[in-house]
Image (cartoon, rainbow, N blue to C red):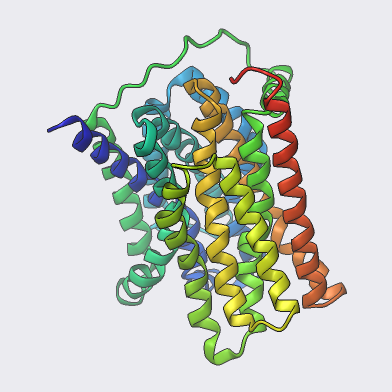
Length: 391
């Protein structure tokens, strides 16, 4: 096997690990009505079964980058896949609601381990244009997983039931762990520092992460993206006619994936990843503004998520572009996991509150403000980076 083919195979298997991690969300979100039928007495708390997996990442995301540096991304990834697979197999027994909720918290540990370790490995085993393409491919894992769960997972649930669906996911996670072992990934990490885990050390990791204009920039920009992505995906289709609602909701994330995969690698040959990110935010502002000028909401919905694909692909590519060492990359991906989970937790209730207190125009005006803040933040970080050496 030639070296390019070997690297391509390794990247593809790491991307499959990402699909498994995203399915930890999608396996509850996509067949949500079926999950509700399992626990009819807990309808008021069912939303927690979906969102509580974000809690671990929101609290410990930055620390996971430090853990990656100490344990090594290969070991951490295998641990995440094995833990996730075991938890899904347990969930296939359909335990009681409280036990299922606890399993979802533990599943958050697995999810965090995978989404920090896998992109760190991809960034280390690829170089140049191949790295740009690989990171853009990685950035698609969430949207692709949700689409696959809708197209393949729902028919599977209808035919075989949720226990078999959870069991299949668990088996695929364990199989992916086996593939990771077989491809024998080797990454040279800096020798880990000896530390005593304490609240002070955790605080120091956060300070070190978010003080750096190289490590923190992709993550903080990512926060403003995730603050609106899931929430707009949930809210905007509800403003459309019922006849087109489902089809537009399906096309929105796919538009972002397609533009990200096709356009971002080409742009990265000529401009920086941060430029691509700010271009995506700027085009998103123009797209929303077009709605105020009379553009149809259906067109705006698809166009908005298409241009946000630039932010999606550019943000993951920014980590290795801004950070040269594996340790700094792991810290940055950990911060992205933390900010992404935080944005997912806060976004929907925040924008819904704005929508209820104003109207659709008021909510979208706030979204424009969010994107303007993201652009300003990236410009500020860029100015800081020009004054210091990279991580």
